[in-house]
Every structure is written in C-alpha cells, then in structure tokens.
Length: 183
Image (tube, rainbow, N blue to C red; front, top):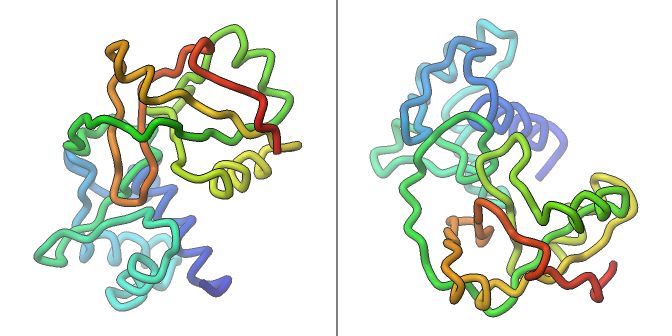
C-alpha cells in the first residue's frame, strides 16, 4: 500500500475505531457507518475521499482492518475499537497458542495485571509471531509473548476471531503468558 492509502487507512481507523464524532460521523451499535456520509463529512474535514479509494484501501490492505457490508453501503473497523460497539463475533475455541507483541517497558505491568485491554475493548492476539513482533516494535524494544490460549479457553475464557486473523479476548491473566519467546 502506498503512503497516500496508508494515511487514508490511518484516518479511517481513527474515525471508525475511536473518534467518529471528530467529524460528526454516525456509527451504529455494530460499528457500521454509511460510506456516503463518511465521504461527505470527510470532505468537510478537508479529506478528499471517494468510494473507489475507500474500497481500494479496504481490499488492498494486508491487515484487513475494515470490512464493507454486503450491499457495499457501509464500512466498519474489524477490531481495535475504543468506542463501545458490538461486532457480533462469536466465541470460538482458539488455536493452542496465540501471540502478543509488546515493548519491554510494559513487562512489569503485564506481570502484575496480565494483558488488559486498556482503552480498547479487547486485547489483540495474533496467530503468528511476525505480526505480534511487528506490533510490539511500534512501542519500543519488542518482546514476544506466547499465550496459552487453548488452556485459557478450557478454563472458561472467551476468544473471538476476527476476519483479519486477529483474536480478541477481554483479559489474559499472567499465568497463561510465557515470555520465553522474546523478539
């Protein structure tokens, strides 16, 4: 994805995950926003968006951050929300191991509290080490954490898969985290 489309993706993430009110955009209880309204309000915000550009960002992103409704009239972020939304994901049995990338300066807090969602609705977990390490490197010296997800699931914790291969969980207690796979 080129720089222009990456910037649009970040803008859409900001609006659809965190601050739709920044431009007066209406997002329903399931996170959906009308594409035509998004285009119009973004233009008033000084952003030149059109339907084809939005669809290009959605379909060409390797991260699958967004989805388009079946009728192609609405868009929503698939994960990462700090605003209250119900994405209608169903709890499923996770893979045996999932991964979380973080920075070394977060380890003391994680050892005390486990992984907490913070200002987001869920903790984000990856199915592969590369994605988790990339995420961790955004915040400082990366550390890769292995999550014994299947064991957690057997102890009653729910996991929600997203269309982007990110798994969501409300909390990961430290006793299910292994630090031995540092990046």
